[in-house]
Amino acid sequence: MKIDCRIDNNAKTKTFVLEGELDVHNVKNLKSAVSESLENEEGWTYILDLGDVTYLDSSGLGMLVYIKKEITHEEGNLKIINIQSQVFNVFKLTRLDEFFDLSTK
Figure 1 (cartoon, helix red, strand yellow):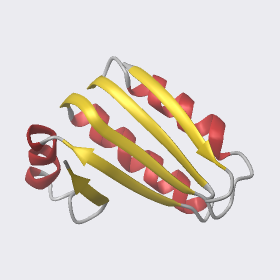
Figure 2 (cartoon, rainbow, N blue to C red; figure 1 turned 90 degrees about the vertical axis):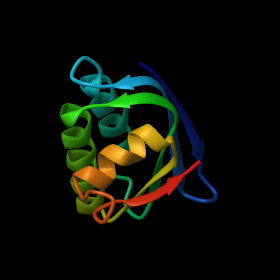
Figure 3 (spheres, rainbow, N blue to C red; figure 1 turned 180 degrees about the vertical axis):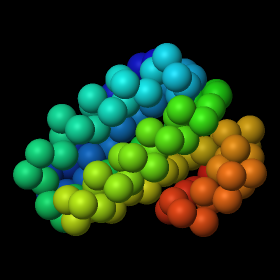
Figure 4 (tube, helix red, strand yellow; figure 1 turned 60 degrees about the horizontal axis):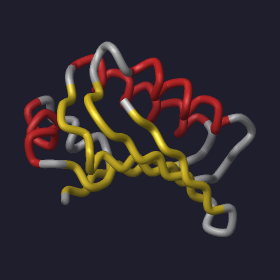
């Protein structure tokens, strides 16, 4: 999985552009990338761009829940954007589409 981080200090946003599969083999990479950017960063908006994510399993979902809780603990917001339909279906089936702030392609 490829992860690219873009920071906009003026808007207080950090966008993580993900590419590949978000599964048991890649969740640690995502956790590391987001966790490193969370230190002492209150009030920021974190955006996960899943436009190029082709697969999401239960480990990926669990990591997204963990990341949302960590961001909320730091008084930040999480948005997940550009979700492909097959990945969005996973959110719907698990009813996590009601837990996250999501937008599809």
